[in-house]
Length: 157
Image (cartoon, rainbow, N blue to C red; front, side):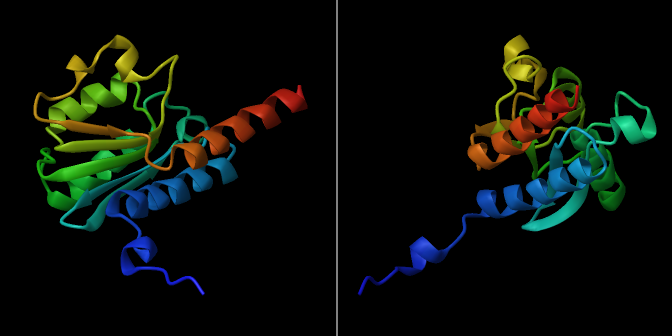
């Protein structure tokens, strides 16, 4: 009989909150949007949620991150998100990275890289100098959601 230690049963906070971002991504998928989801966390609590709404709103700026950042700022009743973490299923684009710069968010945690449109392609100087970045949290789950979405789009054409 194998005993599992407490540490093996515990989900790390980054994984826990990325699971919440994945829930948001699945909501986007249900709306036939590119399945990207995001949550903003402060003091261990989700204060903003968002998923892609670009098709539904016919708004190229309605990315998951923008929705979550706006919701968090509204919750805090202020534009700065210091001491907050943005969890997003896919590496933010340059627009979303730029928006995060202005919020002065403390951390960005993302799952899958975006080789074509991610902010790292341009350079991490898009982020606030004090923003920490962690990549690859639940990367496979995030990548599979995107991969399956685009495969299904290609098979319909």
